[in-house]
Image (tube, rainbow, N blue to C red; front, side, top):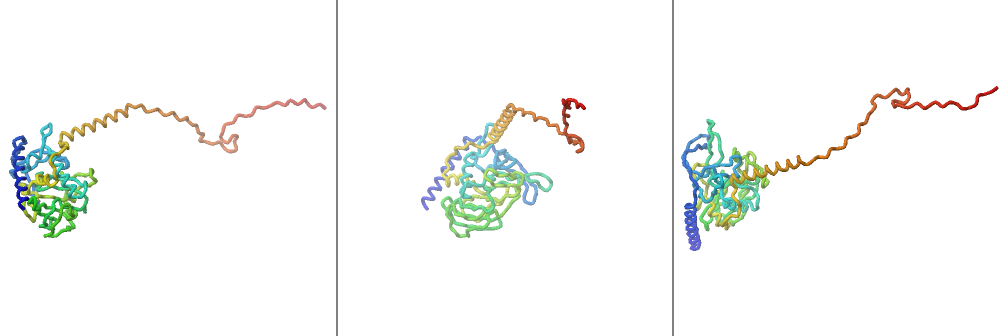
Length: 343
């Protein structure tokens, strides 16, 4: 127990030092203003919120730019050459590691990130607003896929109307909540190990909305109008339930720092996926396709030899006529050479 307390204190000190250093270097601005939100009854309300504006989240469907809650630490964002924010590569590393352990293989896709504003929906009077701020991380896979525990620990919840499984881990003093599970294989009071199968994915199929109307062809996951998915949320301490879904203020805790410790992730070697990078890739692809078309058009195509024309006589002469429809040349007449007959 003493070692655990020392480790937790060390992690807290390291976190404070890291965050303070990043705060000094960060020039990411936070916007505070009133925004429209639409609740489950389609009532529109204006709420004063603080957020990072126009963050590029490539996984978030047709809306490439979306706000993120200011509760997400600024070190998890980067800027491209145009000044547009994007999620930092370390976030992609962490969520990829979580997804692989969650599904037991490199399958599925990350659909929605922690602190990301949820889809835009229309209220009763036609006004469009956000449906809330996302409390955790959504992972999408095929319905019925096995769900594995990201951390071992004590099961404090094993099923409710949201299909919730809650597992408290004493080492990190956090509860991980898995929502929308079906065929739950654990019960309250069980102790599970990391990577144990705890349930299957997909008791709740949600309307995908405009932003999540995506086909995850990259990993053979089809996501059209509805989706079976697993929502993973982290709360510090021991809990039995998740936070209010799609509220305007984050009440869960950022999972990235703990997950970095869990998976031993220290730095990322990948490039950030930014709006500018995607646009550059699109431009290069279009240029390559145009060059290929130009080369194909410049290559001379051999002219085929003309086919000899065949004249066919369609009208056949009467069978009684000479030649039966075919023109013939009459034979030359030969004169007799015999001597005249004498009497």
